[in-house]
Image 1 (tube, rainbow, N blue to C red):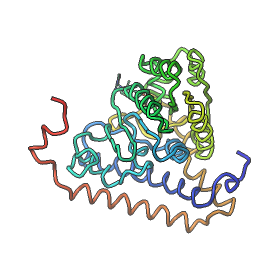
Image 2 (cartoon, helix red, strand yellow):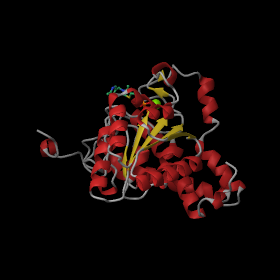
Image 3 (cartoon, rainbow, N blue to C red):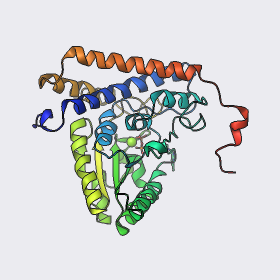
Length: 325
Ligand SMILES: Cc1ncc(C[n+]2csc(CCOP(=O)(O)OP(=O)(O)O)c2C)c(N)n1
Ligand SMILES: [Mg+2]
């Protein structure tokens, strides 16, 4: 991108995006440690490598826009504003968790912040996003539903039904594909007849584009434009961001299906040092300030872990509350 950062956003916003990416990375790496210690159990899918996507996109949305995601969603919740302590406590299964410890890693939910989950069923978020957008349109609220999903979700019937109804009913849904090139161990090329995911919307007359998901500013600008378009026209739009997860699918995945050289190549495009380099070279910040931002993130995550450790387990009587029976 040739344009100077300051021409796009004020320093404060640029630094905030850097801060959020660093916080997400620290949070996820700490989760990995807590998992190996046995403090986090069950499935754990980490976001390291994909930070530019959640951060760039969320910053381009309105505060009351709905956000939905899949099960790799700690970063999306934290960037939206959920207290990292309550996210970590949720992962630990503690009563202070954002879902009282009953949802766990894959089912974060924070309706006060319009963060509507957290879905472990691949593609489970599509019909819900479409329904939320329908409600928003019906109530004339002017907000949109931003629906994050992986490349692995686009061969689900839900994806196609969602696109179809969003277009037929002219609903304000921003479909946002985080194409990290793999659904568990299967590459997009092996699972999709048309690997250019953004092109798949042509069957539903929905505009779309593909962007570099390792560049927070590119993601931000694309989503800003897309979200404005969705709001203005009350019509769906799809953005596909090309990204990469640095870790395995989940903590249980040794990742044997990817060549080490491929992973290394993508790590060279790590969105965090890449953005740091630009902030420095454009005179927006110095190395000392960047170090201080990292230090602050480390402390925030340490506090989140301590909070989770010290929090009580849910009471036995809680077993039957907040559930469908
Ligand atoms: C309906 C359904 N089918 C299969 C699974 C098993 N499964 C869990 S994750 C996953 C891959 C999804 O990949 P992608 O959408 O690309 O997300 P990523 O893990 O790359 O973030 C599959 C098939 C599931 N959870 N739900
Ligand atoms: Mg994927």
